[in-house]
Amino acid sequence: MSAADAHLADPIAFVLHEARLLDEQRYEQWLDLFTPDGWYWLPGDARHTDPLNQVAHLYDDHLLRQIRVRRVQSPQAFSQQPRGRCHHLMQLPQIEAGLAGEDSLRLRTAFIYTELRGGRSLSLPGIAWHDLRRQAGQWKIACKRVDLLHAGEPLPAVEFYI
Image (cartoon, rainbow, N blue to C red; front, top):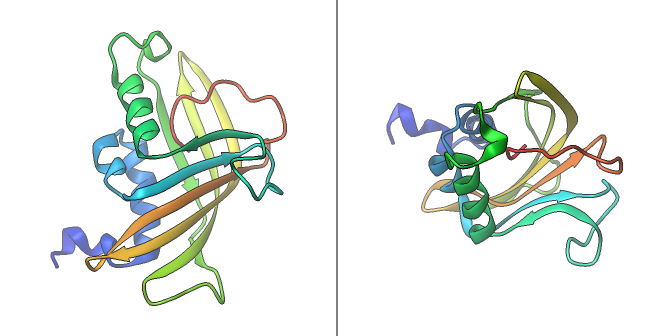
């Protein structure tokens, strides 16, 4: 494995790399980090346990992630004129005790997400949970759950993935 691919073997580096891809708007590479059956979940409340029967801001499978990325990249996306940017300020991800396995594990990462669009910034603190699965020697995201501190409050339109 090359030094450039080392982040794919180390789960903590993998999570940090995922945030960097979003910050750098490298969405195609970001999409490739998920398993084919992977989910991105932004529940309406950190206490929620069921994305199908409880309110969620997002619960995106492979197809919905692709559609959202295409929309953000589109020159016709009015909300992206001028193009917005985002930044993740993250604590070091922690592997959750008792959940680590040889081919799957869960990481918890506290963060502050900031988005800049049209001269206005939005900051959202929260906890990201990455359920990772090892496939062909590389970690992939089986589920990314983002528990926002403000999840139960009315949120403005968040343009990017957090």
